Amino acid sequence: MSNATLVSTVVNGDAVQFACPTDESLMTALRDRVGLTGVKEGCGTGDCGACSVTLDGQLVCSCLVLGVEAEGRNVETVEGLAQDGQLHPLQEKFIEHAALQCGICTPGFLVAAKALLERNPNPNETEIRYALAGNLCRCTGYDKIVRAVQAAAKDMRKAKRR
Image (cartoon, rainbow, N blue to C red; front, side):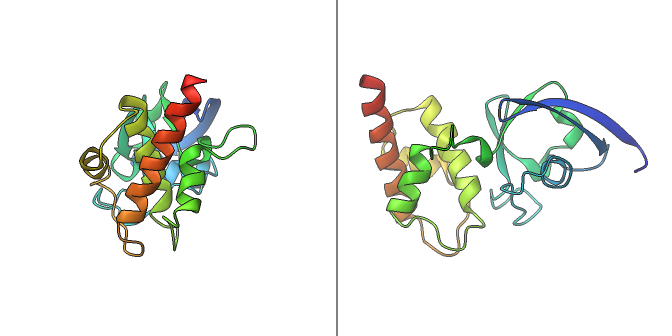
């Protein structure tokens, strides 16, 4: 591995180190070096959102970010949604509302939806569609995905009131 750099970062709350070529994308580093295969390559050009992760809380297409840019930063992937063996409400609602089929786009939609709900716990349909506009799905259409996000937002608001 020529021109490799040691990257120290936090991924889904865990300290991680990996050697990464300086021209390798964060998507490839997460998949091939860290073993997080939930990050999907759909287009490789930032157009489909299948590789969406958050980097210091900001939603990014990991195919457009270099792996070395994760140095000292916090990365969250779809693998970080479930906690202690319990699915995140978004994951539960995607299943309940049949908002997934082939699964290529699902991780990116889940990460993007979580980023939305963290900044806006009560989005309307237009806000959900706008927040998810960078994620493409060829199987489900978008209505089931939007309904799943709405239902998860409602459940998450109820849980916070308890």
